Length: 463
Image (tube, rainbow, N blue to C red; front, side, top):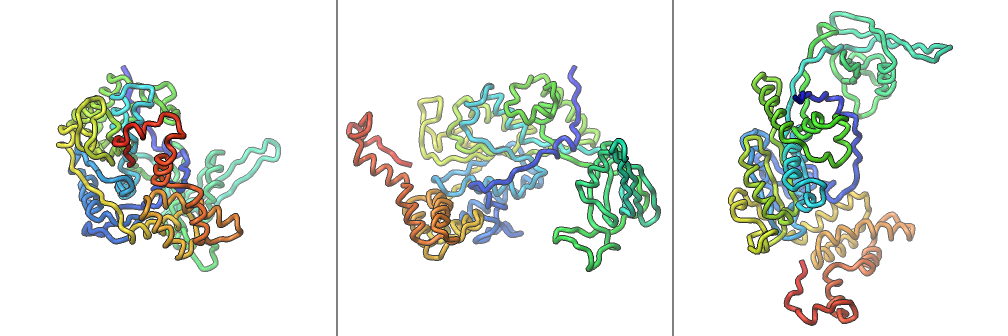
């Protein structure tokens, strides 16, 4: 019989997030106001007002927990912001609601069955909000005394905490002393100490110690001195996913297997036991189910078996919201000889709310390029932006965005901190777009191996 263990919050706070400037790193949300009306430019979003408003309606229903097991299809031409809208939904939801992003082709590269891969993706997108009481010590730091042994080098110490009603002295262990040093805790800080784990958290700086002479940064938060008892019981709420609980209870290493990448297939019996235990926690008021979002990009890459799985999985009472994205028109349904709109079978499309995206106009392309220049910390002249915008209109937005960093490197080579027209033109001539590349192949196809263009020119297609 497998024992289902509730993971501790400390197990998921130690990993460090590495921030990179990626293709969608400028997205901060959907850019909507309180009435779900899209702003022209907001939170990194530009244009696509109808699509963003539709996504905002879905976002509100997700937050309210009113819908689950629904499917949203974002469909449109390449480079029309489908992934950006999905990322905007993820940013707007925050970290408390699970959001899983994957490409349709991923399931064919993992060393497990397709249905197992999709099952894990579904359970990564379903959160369990666990409530538990813990004993904490909370107070304002009055004094910290740390001594170091001259012989062994071991550190010992004491900390004096106070509230508005009492004051107490506590002994410090080696780990707590290390935490105090790491957090740079000093007299006047308001802190909490978890009595079980010994973890120390700084809540802020006491108002009584705030003065113009404090060398404090702009991020310093001032709080009131705690009231009442120093030692108290506090309800702690943290969210983990069903997949994380699956891995913890099916692997010998526990939560460490979450960092090993491919976790392998998980026995369905273990999942049934976990579902039963979670249902029990829910009835006892110890936990809540939080349906999240599963985003599958390039969904046309799935095959008919995967589509059949999605049809069944969406009917589950714990299914997340599934957002699909595709840039295909009427094309073959993978795994069959039939064609379908967007490469999807009709029975799955019938379960979808379809959001249509449209190509960006010239003004919107310029705004997006300006946002990307700011995101990539690139200074560019107005004339260079005009040229880059024209390139984006004549070719594709993605191609124009790719030229920002390369043009900046060329500008740096000539000892300039600002990208000018000559830099953009130079990289435009160095790196060709797909239209010029296709034209070159048409003109020189006979010089390449397998000259199929001359034999069957009607089959030549360029996305």
